[in-house]
Amino acid sequence: MIRTMSSFSRRTRKTASLLLAVFAFCLIANQASAGTRNFTYVYETTTQPKGAWEYEQWVTWKTDKDTDPEYDRIEFRHELEFGVTDKFQLGLYLSDWRYTDGASVSNDGTEWRTFAIEGIYNLTNPTTDFLGSALYGEFLFGDEKLAVEAKLLLQKKIDNWNFAYNLVYEAEWEGKDFNEEKGVFEQTFGVSYQINPSISVGFEGLHEIEYEDFTEAGDDVVYFGPNFAYRSKSNWWFTVTGLFQATSVDSEPNIQTRLLVGFDF
Amino acid sequence: MRQMIHDCQLFANRALPTLFLVSAGLLVSACTDNLITRFPPPDVALLQQAQQADPAITMADLDHGRKLYLTNCTACHSAEPIGRYSLSDWQVILPDMSAESKFNAKQGRDVSAYVLSYRRMLAQQSTR
Image 1 (spheres, rainbow over the protein chains, first blue to last red):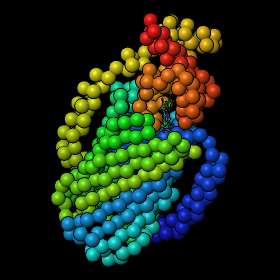
Image 2 (image 1 turned 90 degrees about the vertical axis):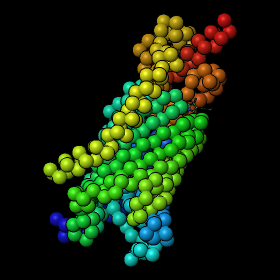
Image 3 (image 1 turned 90 degrees about the horizontal axis):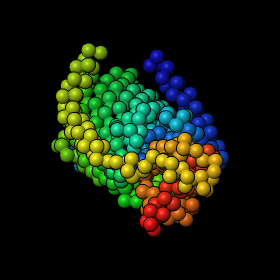
Image 4 (image 1 turned 135 degrees about the vertical axis):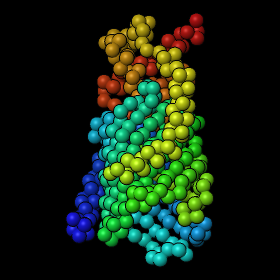
């Protein structure tokens, strides 16, 4: 199964090109829009309305490890989202790739990583229900990485305040033979305040524990930092977060910044 | 599998206090929020107001409009207080925002009926 992976991913690359073509077509078809994100690490519970498409460009920059102050990693993700129904949204990560550089990095440079498919099912509404909730599932696959991720998304919107919490479990198989196994538990939390319909500011927090081989618990890693979201009058928006490590885990970057730019159509 | 369950328990021990605090916070704030007073469900007076503009509007339409306002119009921003914008502002905002929400004609009509008739009521109340 694993040996067929590389030809499999070649085929999936072709599929991705096809999807890009479909995406381009839809851009030309250019319908009205919907959707926006107030956080970059935390997911909210609402989904794209039925029939709405969105393209999201992700850029995450991780830098400065205590063990390697010159460390830099820039991750790119090209995502296409589609509202299947008003409560169910599908996302395709057309391609995840990254650039790494640093004293501790043996093969500096750019590498292609994965494709992924993600589904979010909205259960309750964050404004009208007592607590907004949704379920999130993701399947990620590449030449040297396979992963399955499940999230419980919770959210409450009160007046101009927006609170969101995610509980995440991810199982990962990495390496040439997919034999580096690891489980990751994660919780993220965000609060944001809407200054006007175009601008929100807030902060996000991230707490993560990795389990090598699904057994050995690593250190708790905690990040906190501010965020800013802008929605334009036309069909695009962006959200940016800067996170700083609150724990002192040497092998993890001290700073990570994420920018999301969305185009609705 | 057993190991995974064990990990879950380990994690839960560490994560649950946070989860608990977050939910307690949400509970308190949810109890103090009052959507019913900020966005009142339609009553007979509101229906009469709406029917002056369009006799075909029913109570169910207004209910539907309010629901859309609170669920769909909050996808990108919070539920804007209706009194914050003038009637003529709303007449420009509503078609624009209905398109943002990908509303069909019926959805657009219902949300507009709710917002515009409620805005007219507010105007009358303040001149009384």
